[in-house]
Image (tube, rainbow over the protein chains, first blue to last red):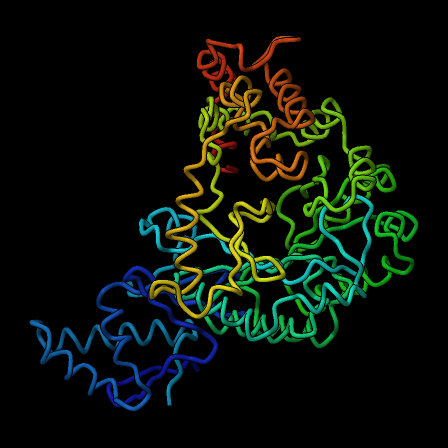
Length: 100
Length: 408
């Protein structure tokens, strides 16, 4: 069964990728096969994704991250939680993050 | 909502506006090679201890890679000589990958070991390995490489790349000992998983990059295809003419007296001895910068940033002075078809701006084949070149044009 994330999950960037910020854009570079469909594929995150990615320190739960963002951004907490879970589901599916 | 998007690399590169971002980055890890190919412009003997001692050490290469990463480069090309001769290759490869760079490796594949293949299968290069093939049999391969047993090692390397599923492409140096094998080579290449189009060929070989061997230069000249043979070879690709229609519409026109109408100096090559070059081929001493004597910073900037943003832009402003160049090349509209450039002028004549007759003849033969020139006409004398290029662009069918645009 495919693993999933909840607000109690703690996630961290996988060691199989390198994330770099170039000219303000967050670029995710796979180091191993199986992350992209093609061997030379790169990924980028939208602005919401980038803001969440910066908080993935491997210690905070996704709920903590959503709460921290709710304090900072003018958006309903439920919407932020949806964004956090949506992003992490996608990153987990692509093996860009791991669940601790 | 989609939070993660695939990055289209070419599009990303194209919209990067900051001139301080390093786009193309090559490191020539060594000039030594385990082959001694008859046509090669750069190989020194594998056992050349003087050359080995002068090469950048591991720490220096790592520092260069870090500087390049800080300049935003996504890709590094490791070339040589044969880069796998360096005992620290695996260490440098991993270091570059962990900096988030994708690695292109130019190799003859002879030194692909099971350990290296395993490593590159686990930590993927992110770019295709490019293997040059010198023959399909030991007789032809070893004759080009001038090394007995080289073919067997090359085939073992290919088998390892396949076994560990490392994506690679093959290309060929098209030379007298292997020319009769072209059909066999292309049939084999078509069976390889990474080969989605016909292999590329080198056939208009460069002279010695260090201008170190006049006799070798004369021999290399004898190995080049004639201009007419070059045209015939290009036309083996059924997509060549439609591609040229599109290409010429974009890239033709007299360059004027600016020497660097190419991309030289917008990217950066570091040679085996720590010198920054404007491109892989240009080694004229007036336009290389010794990074090893630069210290840790120059005016508060990393040496690589300083060279890319201060030194190269000034060099790119250089103008041609050679009267022959000004009379011919500066006024010639075949820019996109001609390989004349400061690097080739350096290799052939030791200057930056002397016309190279062979390249001029090849460009003219190609232009005649495309209908851009009449027999015996010189391109710099043609005033209505725009009309001719427009006629060529309009001569294809819509389907050919669409396919060519997609390929380009």
